[in-house]
Image 1: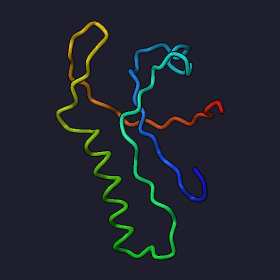
Image 2: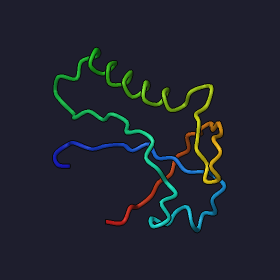
Image 3: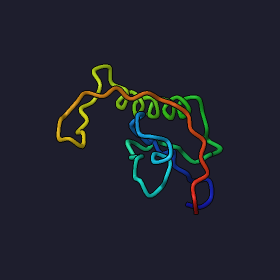
Length: 95
């Protein structure tokens, strides 16, 4: 990406995976669930445009955090209902 373009990935992992495995890039414990829309900074940033940007990001998050949960296929072959929880994590990704 160049200029003012960027993305905000919405990644998910299972909480009971030990941290020594979960945070290794080679373990593939984190999966991309959604990408939050981030719009370029422009001079025509009116109130209507600002509201549209906020609404589109909110719709992505709401679709991920449904009240009824989401069906997750587990390694043992069983399908279970999972309820994602948003948590912040700051990480320095290897380049």
